[in-house]
Length: 146
Image (cartoon, rainbow, N blue to C red):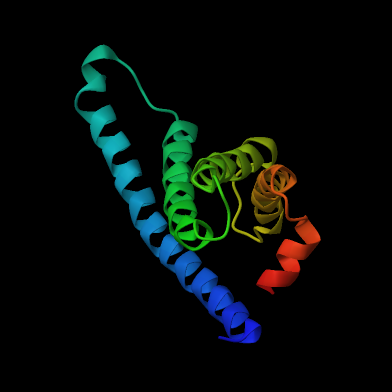
């Protein structure tokens, strides 16, 4: 197989798994929010405990991060040693970005460029630490993939 074919295959795999992760993650977001609302309205009501919206959003965005990170891990695991941490980093980055910006600037409807930048920064820091441990330099790794 040629290098160009492998590059296209990697890129296509990455896009498809990220899209799949988004679809699964949004579904899980609503499931997590529904579970939190159900707990609040039934069990926790008796103890007078309420979930603030930020806890529901944090659980929801963490579930999106887990779904996207898990799907992307399927692509990364063959290329990067210790890539299982990618799921953890992505699941941490999503609630930090979305809930953090909502807390700082108030709820809004897009554009989500700032949130995406925060998530990318988390993932970039993780990749930098992983690639520093690797005998292959980052530039060579990126060149081999794209």
